Length: 324
Image (cartoon, rainbow, N blue to C red; front, top):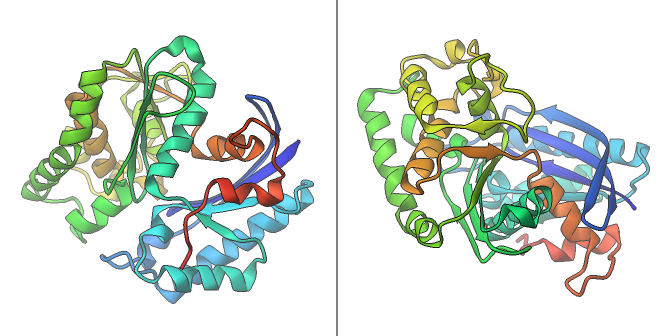
């Protein structure tokens, strides 16, 4: 069954078209539209009209492209950048003016569960007790399970973009005191879930998201590290990378191996979250997993809770939170 998902995030809108079968995904087409929402989101998360227009235009373009690839009703979902915005109803209205496909808002815990689902399907049962870490733009998801579904699913306000906006303000690079304060804040936010992870003692820890992927490239000896799935991120080179990142402005970080210009401003905050999580959870190294939230959404949408197939048109019922 051919299905498609449109992921409306803080940095990009991504289209993912795949053939979906039981427990399997075969990619057919991917596309992305780069956004500059960081310039249009206030410190409290309110999105400006210009940001809404930019996001709505990209979502509409992704939906049109989905139809060209044979999926008339892609599953469109938005995460923290829309979910946590004080003017969320107005953002959804702006998207609705450009696109007739509903936008589903994923609660943070649901996002964590779906990312776990994707990672578990990718790793298989042989991975044993599994922890999944995912640093997004607005939130940080942690999930744990010993089976095909997560037993623990947590979402914390530790997204790399959010922390950069709230803690580093316009200072580039941030001051030593700002970095110290952020470390303290992240450590406090992670106290409870890190204790839970240490208690269950996972056999495998995987990390998804562009933030972890780019950090693994930065920390590899050749700046590449091979393909995701064979790549691991270790704490010692990550600690060294943080010392380097905190001295550099965003423009200079973008010249480092693995760090894209679009994510250079938030690379330091993301690295601090990653290193703190790995240290407090006693997870070293972590395996970079290529499957994440988009794959999880499609897998969940394909299968209803009783294991029967559901249509793409009705799939959003498995995912969404109230949009008002």
